Amino acid sequence: MPGKKEDGVAKFLKSIEKEAQQFVLGELEKQETRVGEKLNGDAKLKYLRDAANRYIFKKRSAAESKKLMSKTRIKKKIFPLTCQLTDKEFMERARELAFNIQKTSRVESEKKKIMDDFKSKLSQLDTEHLTLSNIVRDGEEVRDVKVEVEYNWVDGKKYSRRMDTAKIYEKQNIEEHEKQRDFFED
Image (cartoon, rainbow, N blue to C red; front, side, top):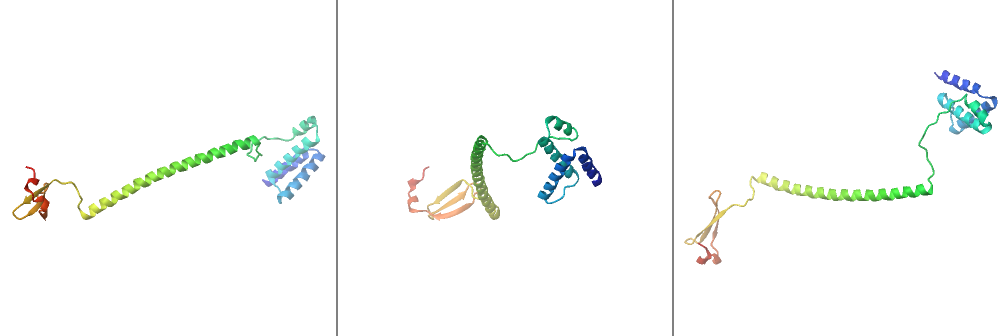
């Protein structure tokens, strides 16, 4: 295969004039010196064609160029290349940058607000986890339960009885302020 590419280079060189050949080969030698390596195959053929096109546009009239160009092939492509910005383009990009920075700041602010909200929700869940784990560990929890308090004036005690189980859960002495009989409503 390498022989075919070299044949293409030789064929191309034969298709152009002697003066153009000298220019093209000189350009190739300069390019290989700049790059630091020999060009081969398609790369060499492409470079030679480009050099021939430069020669044609530099040295020939439009009619001669057209005649010589019929022996070569030009392919137009679009490549992303760096370009110097005009003042107007520079200002447009600066505005875009400022807008982008503001937008980033707003998004970061939203993110912080959302993260704080999630942090609060997670903290609330952690509190619920702790409460529930204590209930599960102890096997009991605090609830509102109806209670009946029985005052026994004979022994001076008051008994607190749960209405759900009918068990006395607390026994205390009747306090002085509770000893007034009209304290109780009938």
